[in-house]
Length: 343
Image (cartoon, rainbow, N blue to C red; front, side, top):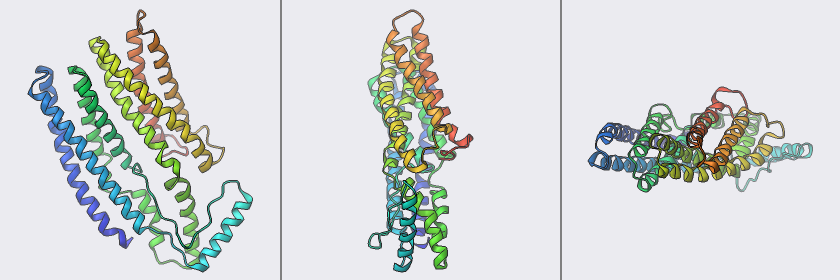
């Protein structure tokens, strides 16, 4: 991948600086947290809000860097074939289309396939998810002046920033799975070997990387996860303080997150049929997503009876269970075999 080498170096160097600044900002925010418990509404709280803003800005800068890197990939990674190989590929594709309802588009020599990569692949998805949470947390902070709620928002942001920087750094090894996958394309290959590599890359490019659903299904789910994290902070705060304002804040984020989650799951269904065919329904990620949606639905229905005896604690506990179900759903693909494994 000679044309990408300089872009990768810039990406890693600039990303490394952003990660360093994020770690410093998260550490400073962590230092502010215990002081706020003693002096709510004072200088430590104002400093914490400033640091949350800085972290959000750094996450946004990282997202812009990801967009630039993906543009470089679009410009430099082209599955171009000479005329004779293109004719052979189209003959294979036409023959395959006659035998299957899931056909690949024919190869166009005037516009060879390029990778239009979305911005939530591999470890980059954490950057998008945590940026969405950071922005939501800033707005929630301004809307509710409750010390414990604000402290919880900060704790969750510190945890997410630490996970991004120390465990899921998207800049240290950019898109390792994708770059390993396309690596053989840039090797010296005999014509028939190049045809074989193309037929390995082209279906995944069409049904995964360049799929229209890739631009709607994952980001809707990550927006739901971000909203659920603020919702979790609101549920803990409502149980801690017993204040209706905390419950109202939690419920507001629950409604929005539920819409994102439902739309994301519904849009995943036609994509699964297109990419995997009919034999995907009992994928562990799908089953755990349905479980999370059912728990979430139960919370929304139980909340209708919030004024009844014992329902305050029950509804708050259900909200915390929703957050735990979200964590289980997300991590299921890393531990249970299925179509989503490792995604």
